[in-house]
Length: 440
Image (tube, rainbow, N blue to C red; front, top):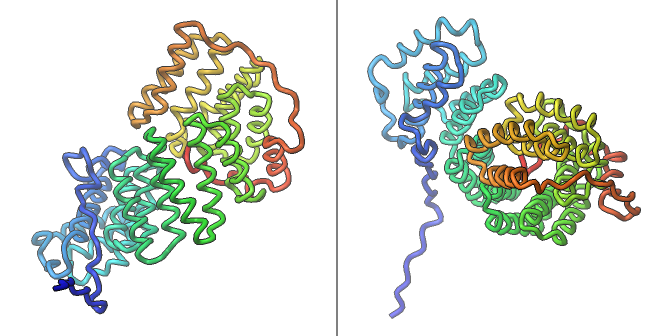
């Protein structure tokens, strides 16, 4: 007898999936308490924290159990008193928190979309104020309110990744890819898969990152997503560099440049990554002109400008230009104090240290490496820590390579010429462009 399981009824809509709230807070003894350390004055910090926890608890509670009194008697009235003296100072934020206060008054009647929008407004406020943890928490809270919003899940994962909250980032990015696949939103699915690959890259899992990015490339090609093809090829270039496959790296770079087109803003980050590769290989003659051409196109308060300046300082030292090294190193240190560039700081300090070592400034190089190690340890950046150890060893053993001689100008078909032509003719979009996808 052929025993077949009955197919599920097509008329039955699946329950919306939920992300367990504890997964967002690995290692935290008190959920969300880290936002209290971001310098929000007085009662604001406490109200933000309590509001965030309210949203998480409400979103994790099935609709049929969202009964009056679930937050305790008088909770809404107490929140009203907390918000009243603060409304005049931060009206936009107070308005968003007032919407969240509605959860306390009537949990069953609260609208998920309105609560999610309030959380996004708080996240935007936190981002503008340089409070990245609070921004992440409220972006995640918005994602909990609308679990089928793949873009919001991706945003939460991206922010967690930038904070080096790897476990939370992986949960959100995988969830975003799955939610987008269910809705056949191929663009968001591709972005989420790329984001997951970048997560593995940042943790030093290069082969896993390559596997995920190849899947993203196949997805983008299958659905004719040209820009995302460029992004996948771009990231595969950087991964090939880390795996020391130079031939594949240059091939990926050429394909990425063709997929982007000269005017695409990601040409800036591609140009930087290619120049970084050449610099690491000692090909300063191709690296330095590209880095100098990139500088005017980078946004003043961006991680990309920090990277360009730091690698430019290294390249200048490699050709013996002490004045240019000092100028670019000083500008890089200034850029490194900006919160948005924090994720690039450790790697940038290593590049400046390499330049200092080439110029026999060993005290400066050692101090820069100490700073780089401190930042990299705090963020769990394994790849940067390996670079710090390698350069320390070279300093200790006196094996720093001496000043290089610039190579002859490239031919017209050289990748360097293609990049310079793109920067000159296309301008890589508007000045500042976007941050590199893998190194961002």
